Length: 219
Image (cartoon, rainbow, N blue to C red; front, side, top):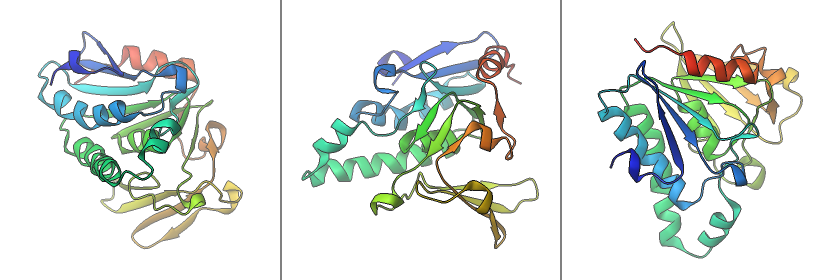
């Protein structure tokens, strides 16, 4: 595949080696349909093989959403179709593994709501930067569904230890939630907005986020 083959991902190649990837379904808050979900499995191999790209930055079109998760019409059409469900589950794993396998640094510029599949892409990036207006959540636990890739995010700290972050849609107040356990940290989070995320330390104003992306310089 090459960049021209993608329908719902838009690309802006900066002269400094930065590739800006925009999830481009703003009319539905950049929700993933079947085609976009598949494209999110494929783009990381294309980025990895692109000698001109040194760093990839992914964001959502518009100011409302990074990605609002799975398009409900697409999800509804999977009901009673075990073949389609199995294919979607395979793609869900491919998003995770292909992002992790990409040798190029990936930065997510979370410019708005990030839910479900959007949350997975946002937090599986090597660096995640969130606008003050953005919100993150995941509803799987609330409806009794395991969130195997999206609600559970593993990351390695500078000390080599691993931390786990669990995002739960119906959790209580954020201030009551942080809980350290094991070799890393376990954090239960509700529907969290950018103001609350200031405590975590990766939140900036939306305009600052846009400017930072434009002027980012690749090594």
